[in-house]
Image (cartoon, rainbow, N blue to C red; front, side, top):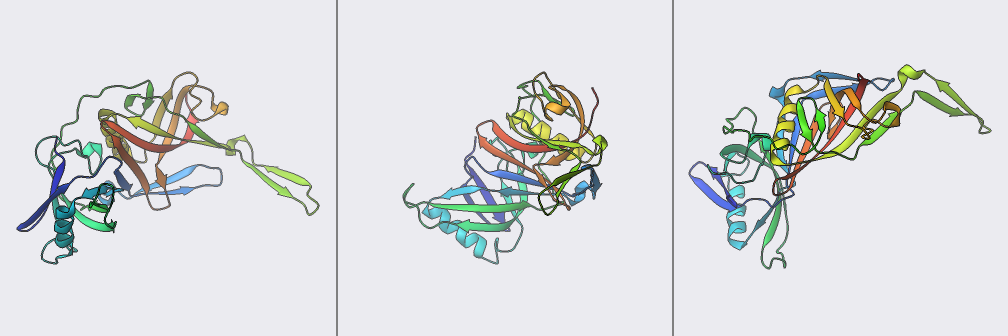
Length: 288
């Protein structure tokens, strides 16, 4: 398993340490959302060709030699300054998944530096330097080929086509279609728009081994704004007490976060064979 990576621009290249665990991949899906007054969502998918990915929260740790080399490389207009560069991981498994577990840990990625946040000299470890470098995977560039590993199941939760996921702590959000108003003297009145206007969402953090992390990210980026069935076991209460302890729920994904322009997945590599993916879903209906 390699512990370094190489940046190349033309005839120039530098080799540095890869980031420590805790780095994060942001997957920006070009899916627009709008929420109606009854809590339901509408979606418009501009297409996966408008998606992009970032390597974020990537804490690189450099000794003095590497820091000098990378500073010169990314400031030199004849090398990596304001240019696309190739980040090479090599041909052997590295355990480093810069742009998501579904894109693998080997091969060459064409990237552009979006931001560099640099520390001063550190005293622990002594005379080392830390950088948070944000790299964007350049769209429409060739990706390395990669073969998914056979999945090792961790539990009984099923999201869409991906079963065997570990139990999670669900954080349901219940929104009743009630509008409360108070008169000047504090007297409360309620406008009830009816049961049909009530809505439910849920959020949770999936803790995943590599095989399941790759599978769920690949699935969510392919299924996009289509319906996703979540199947839970007894005592999960995934959408709260109103929707009972278990069942099959037809949902729409809201990613880790979303706004009117995009849905974002943030998958974090926290340790050896350990990934964390926060997700949220809107419940269309309970179907079983």
